[in-house]
Image 1 (tube, one colour):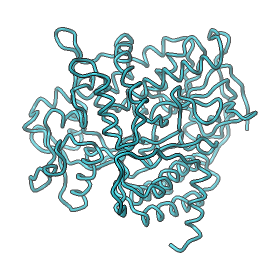
Image 2 (spheres, rainbow, N blue to C red):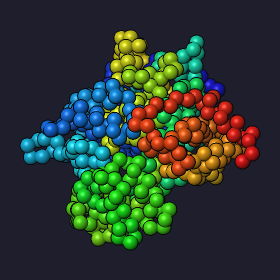
Image 3 (cartoon, helix red, strand yellow):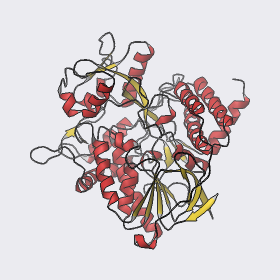
Image 4 (cartoon, helix red, strand yellow):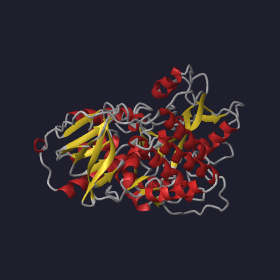
Length: 523
């Protein structure tokens, strides 16, 4: 493998957390690694709801933290929730200064939406459902004007390098396929998204399949809460992969869930009905799908023709499927949406591996617990991106100008094995069947065996091994947690779930040991 050295901090990822961290590190030289053209392949750009923040009375950071803990089903780190919600307002103001065009009223106040499990309207939005795209557009514009940041598009991370007991760099390969190059760097920040694409039905961009979490796990990082995968209850079930999202803000505006019989099936399921925590609504939608009752989101009475102006992203996705949501309900299904688990980090964003930081969806900070509160994902990305930048700067010492670290030119590389699409499809089917919305020991055991078979079918493909590493950790952690809690629902759990519980921590070595044991047992 060819090796090259840089004095730049390497940031893997091109979503909100990565861009915000790169800007916060300025003027320290940064190499930002993006597999796609900036802004086109990041989950952040697809985020519809917005950023949760207590911006107006009678709301408060304390109330926001309380809602976060309640949604997280007993395993949210209370101090993390308090500290993150206290910082929220400052990040909204910073984004505003950076050009994010948040919706405002005539007096200049922020227009706020209410989403599921929030006691108040506190989601700061842009054009109804365009928050992610517009925030990313503003940050990308700032990034391109920041001389300390070198943007490396068309490359992705496939592994980590270690020396003297610490992470010393990354292995980067052309995103279209090619052999990796080893890049030595003073520090590495992983901000490369989640794991939703490991499932057959997902709202995530196609490339987001747990690879970045997987490469950290393969390097020995401690992973936390890997069993907790959030399924969004209102992904549009219109035959597209990925599935377009019908934002939760629609239900905040009064849209209701019905089935093909016209029944409002959330009645009796939870006092908050459509605005119940996501795991509750997702399981209800899933049950309707399994029963052949075709769940749908009905926006007609709540919004009517206004949906076209106030939620243009949803309306455009409907139009592609030949649906006018002002006239007809939108078919929906529960789809893999957000991974609460990931690389365990401390309050500063440090992982268990020296020299490695992580933020955004790839990290697990303790904020989300077993079930992420709506629109806390972008907030967490902002808070921890800045914290990572601050801690990295302190660890590395006084910043130097970009001219002290010349731009990196990566050499041309030869061919490398790419994942077999049939094996990726097989992996996604296994995860959906065994580690999906409703789980049991038999299904999870079968899932782990199938992951092992997929891995064995192409053992020398690093990109596939990064996916199977994350899939293995999700299924192994889910098998180990024998209770139902939040987004993790075990149909074979017999005991009543305690009000509070413990976070899970697991290394890939431990997960593989469990998988190997199952392979030796009769199926």
